[in-house]
Amino acid sequence: MANAFTAVNLSQLPPPVVVEQLDYETILSEMVADLISRDPSFSALVESDPAFKILEVAAYREMLIRQRANESAKAVMLAFANDADLDQIGANNNVPRLIITPGDPTAIPPTEDVMEEDEDYRLRILLSFEGYTTAGPIGSYTYHALSASGDVLDVGVHSPVPGVVQVAVLSRTGSGVPSQDTIEAVSSGLNHEMIRPLTDNVQVIAADVVTFNISATLDFFPGVGHQQVIDAAVDSAKAYAFEMHKMGMDITIDGIYAALRRQGVQKVNLISPTGDIPIAWNQAPFCGAINITAGVIRE
View: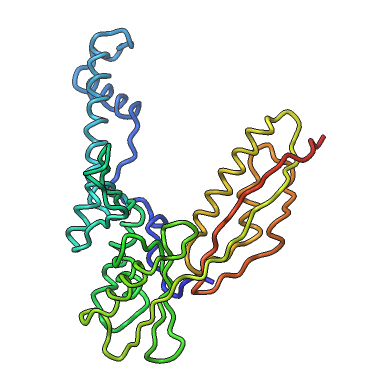
């Protein structure tokens, strides 16, 4: 069960027209054609000709300049900006990057602040427009809860009865069960007089973490390296589990099969889980263990 609020999926937007598709050979051929049109005596150019070498240098330099223009255009787009460029977009929207783990300058060696990852920060910037309203929509509560503490990975928002808003908090730490400090930070943020509608009673609770394990045996086509395939399947299963470790994300059998079916796998014999795992709005799945073993070689 997914959250009722869904932000725009930036990855599904069409490529921006302003970003050119560049090809060095095309640029070079256009330069050669331009030169010949200006002076037909160059119509018999060969690659060893000094004039051709000059055109190669010029074409490569032009490609670099146009690529820099592409990167400059993407740097001001929320969907593509990264690092300091994304910080600038956040600053324009009054959304600073969160500190996930404070650094310790007195430690030996000193440690720096661990900052919010780009993708999480990008989502909060996108959600920040929901925070402008104090009418109490799901998007507004989601944004303010995510911004209340760097330990908040995700939240679920639900209203069981009119006037009551429940916000379930998933932590970045361990299996996702938040500490009392994190719950209090979110509660304090959401109950601020400039955020909470006067008619709402906001209740902040810990996410109910549903632990599951992935266990399977893989059968192989002949001629493949079993351990390499198993390692790839484990990595893929970890990526799937990480992606699903959010509020209200159902664990599906077909999702696990897709993760485990790597190149060289003839059949996936899934042992656990035995069926889909439905996840409620206040729950989040957490993969406790992944156990993948080699089966038989199919002829």
